[in-house]
Length: 142
Figure 1 (cartoon, helix red, strand yellow):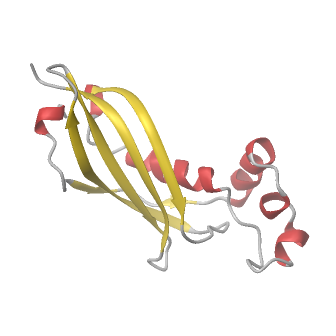
Figure 2 (figure 1 turned 180 degrees about the vertical axis):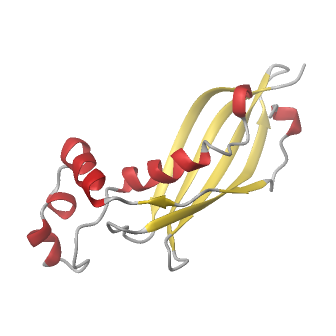
């Protein structure tokens, strides 16, 4: 979708993303190797009571599902930034769904603009587990 066609408030929902324990451990060991993500005995002794998924992995699981329904398609020129806030832990076996909304639009030139998309991810209990705000540069219709 071209920048000119986007409207603040446009919303899409994502398909569910299941947090698989083996994939969670593999990701953690490679990218976020801390005991809370990789050592079950350690994690059981924390206030979480079990291993928790790395936050970036949780976001990327939902992001991958968002890309199946994303607003921009071939009009995406580049990503600009992403900010993620983690609200609740995500555990192996959790099923995350997302709601993505266009939350800001700033025209940069006749050729493109910056579109901000906010993604709220929910676990199977309906609790918000993370909020990600991504800015993307999107081609304008000229």
